Amino acid sequence: MGKRKSGPLSGQQIVSNFSKVSNFPTFFMIKRNFTANETFHTVSPFLVEKAITETVGEVKSTKKLRYGDLLVEFHSRKQSQQIVKLKKISNIPISVSPHASLNSSKGVITCGELLNVATEEILKELQGQGVSHVRRISIRRDGQLLNTNF
Image 1: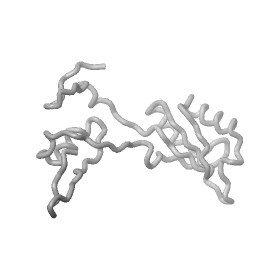
Image 2: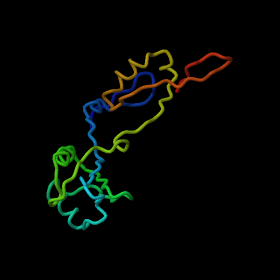
Image 3: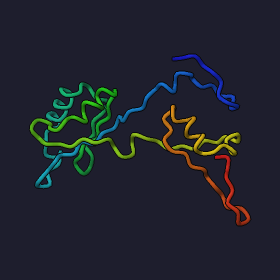
Image 4: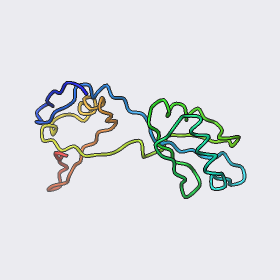
């Protein structure tokens, strides 16, 4: 996995080649380009599964959503790149796009040592781990806005 080195002042260990891991979208929405309110509800699930498997190989999961679109989860970057190019599933015109929220996550970092570090520096240092946005949590105490350790 890589040589371990200790994190700055945290007592935790960080894998040194972790920053080389590149993120890619794994969840995609497949929508049917319809003219008369057609969705995937009327399409055979066998046809859909066969078309996707022939195009990109075995996928992690495929789900038909309530409103008729498909949510597909892929194993690899190569599959993600191939599915974006797909314009038809067995003569059915489709559009493919990464899912708006499932390809990212939000979290809170609690570290007292970061209290006096600028958010720009925190973002710069953590971008290699896939961090795309940093925001401080503030509280109002005695009418003053104070940064927290979170």
